[in-house]
Image 1 (tube, one colour):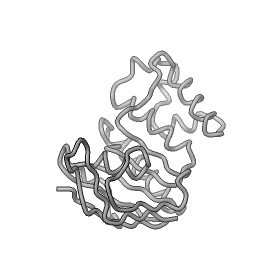
Image 2 (cartoon, rainbow, N blue to C red):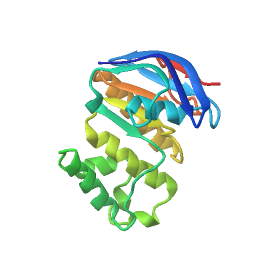
Image 3 (cartoon, rainbow, N blue to C red):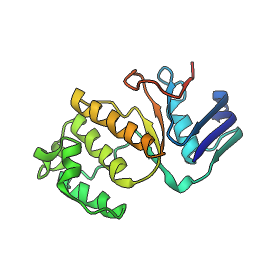
Length: 189
């Protein structure tokens, strides 16, 4: 499994967002995309996922169906309970829902709570549940630690390392330095 970008340039409305980006990540590797707000971190992840077109360069991914993009839009149905949301996404990814998923994300106490009453951190944990139950191997994560408490952040780091240990690839756009020893750091400044 591999992600390879060669000389990627991206423009929006005639404005260059970034140019000349090269990166390669192989099975078992994780990378970090750094940069200030508006530097193009989210745009780069969306381009890799095939959601946004690039202006020039090439993106090669040997199995695009194995990509999971976690962006800012959490796509949570506000009138669902946490359990209903977890069941919906588990079913979508052909997984059997069990309470282990809610325990891994520290959502066990909120299973019967409607999503509209969750805090931002709880909503982020719920959004991350899709990642865990998806069984996708290529994770593109846009600020995944936003709103998470320390325990949930440690658990996410465990899940990231576990995915890499199983031969997956993780590419994270982030402002923090919670990921230790990344194989690749791309700075968009």
